[in-house]
Image (cartoon, rainbow, N blue to C red; front, side, top):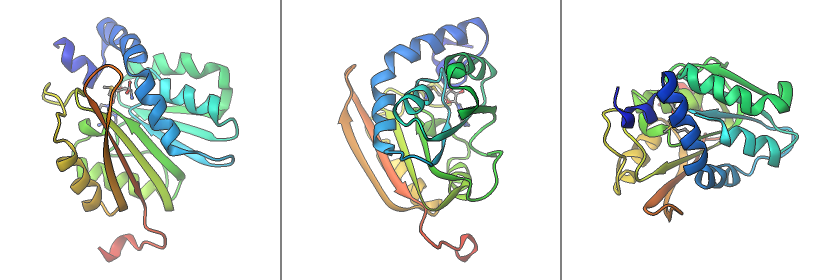
Length: 206
Ligand SMILES: C[S@@+](CC[C@H](N)C(=O)[O-])C[C@H]1O[C@@H](n2cnc3c(N)ncnc32)[C@H](O)[C@@H]1O
């Protein structure tokens, strides 16, 4: 497996190294995504594709009364993130899995976020519909994707990724979908997407 693909699915010793690298190079962007979520005490929040766990730690530190869950398909990243969040005890709980089949019941979360992960979800609209399912009505979604974020085929998201991601978020049933490009501190730009699950949404009404 080449190095680029290790960012999409970290595996083995090289995957663990890539995890440590991501924990440094993506830190400020991941922190910005967490800040955008503006979690409040008592909320239950899910991070999808947490990688080395910087987003989980940032949220646990900045929002002490928030219950946090996370899911990532890479066992190497689950192990690395578990070590990072150990100090928060049972307040942060992690599972192995993908966005396409989230192991939680309907309406489980007040907010969901993902950094540099949504570009990897397959199928994307189906995975976003899973996110909608586990969000409560009125629940918030925040996605951050760097221009250089790796795609499943090894390419990068690129400067027009908003034109792909925003219609998919809408197609999954989200409302209030907004996207914004911001400069990234390592050069290039990052796309920030905000959306909500419509309040009182009947999932079967189309
Ligand atoms: C580029 S890394 C980003 C990690 C971290 N969020 C960050 O920004 O530094 C992508 C992460 O998404 C995870 N991932 C890949 N495919 C996924 C999927 N279908 N559903 C959820 N997470 C996925 C990978 O295992 C990896 O940990």
